[in-house]
Length: 286
Ligand code: PAF
Image (cartoon, rainbow, N blue to C red; front, side, top):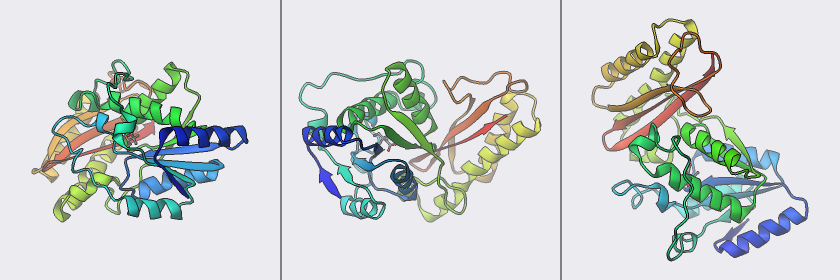
């Protein structure tokens, strides 16, 4: 396994791999890898000839006051996890090289970037789409692997790829969960033991919403949201719910007529436990 820090060097390697007929799989990450990332690496290993894992804490997707500085970083730990997962290249550039002097170009996906997560984290998806497109241009993958845990990120990147005719297949792997249902996330290290236990409420509430919808046991989408909100607030009064969204999985449009809707339903939510903001979602077909 090789670690590449230089953009030009990575491009040349990827160009060579492509010319020699190799299928390249990219797993973009911000490091501090957990089992969820390992699933993505394994899927890439299964489906591609060469796996590139990028490790880059992308400053452009953090808002002022967010946890960019304290975002967990441990390169050596990530290095060994990648090695065990059979990664061929780690791409680990410096921010100064990625966003050089007078950097000006950003990718923004209208509407999709601004709702739900984007409403509470304005500019976040522009930062994500920009870095992901840059990583695609640098590592030239055939396939790129993302976790369903970040549902709006997946929807946004799919749209970017479609709208900009980017020749990369987006592959999505299921969310990995702790035993209590808490979605695996690098940010879970911020939770204390009690919060970690309490955070099971996210997945429980999502399943409550899903079951109500599938059984038809609701008046309208507002009553599903209310039942979920009541469940969260009663079970863990010390947490603070930011939003619940019931949408389609294509443009994350709100489903007004949930009774008669047929197709994929995405329920997403964000909850604060102390200062730690957790997101989760459930995707199913009605
Ligand atoms: O999901 C993440 O870890 C990041 O948003 C990504 C896709 C690596 C872009 O920085």
